[in-house]
Length: 268
Image 1 (spheres, rainbow, N blue to C red):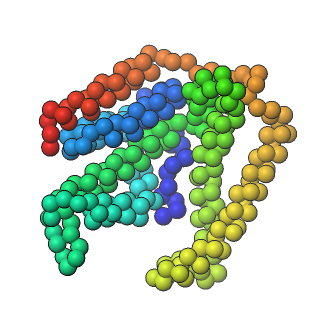
Image 2 (cartoon, rainbow, N blue to C red):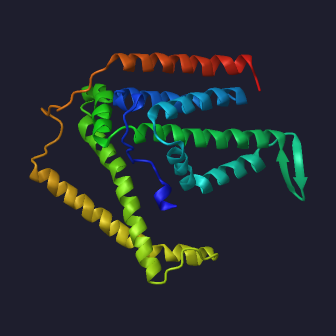
Image 3 (cartoon, one colour):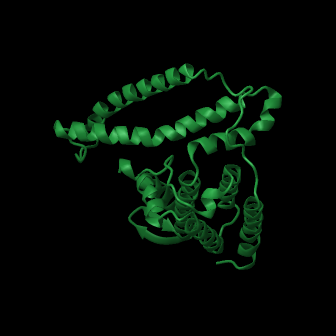
């Protein structure tokens, strides 16, 4: 389960999506997430799924690699679906004892489940096709206007990028610790919830110690290289928009218009 998390990992490939400016990918991902909440019909989900499938094909990242990231949120997904299914009032569809599943609850659960899955996969397209360094540069550029208010834009972007790049490192570290504890007799599959929670304590303690040690080593390495923040720093590869980026923005605008207009005309 731990190794199934793909957030923060980079998948090297030579594709149109990989070659896009990171600012384009961040803004496009934000617009994609917003688009998931502007419609309330299956027609919209068909359009979104088609758009996302096209992006995945263009990215040349295996679809199985994208989907396996969903395994890490199975419990959250199930909880969300169950809450929406049983807590939404409306026309009764199925009644078992005192539990009633309504037609509106079933529809809301299906929509929410689809939204979560599309959101995770859509976000993964950005992180899998963009290196942490490019993400840092893009975030700094996007947040640039905040410098007027004396906001430490470079430092904020750097912290977000470091946090994102630490995810795969901590996942690997967690996996190693779990295997070491299992070799010592730890039981992570116990059906007793209390015992299972207790069995994770020997994982959390060394994981936190390892994370703080890595953070300290990183801070010392940055100081040894005379890192003093973003003021006056130049870029080895400055970000520049190309023709393909403007085409990508045009496609995103067309996609947003389609998501807003078509579901209102063809309602499923």
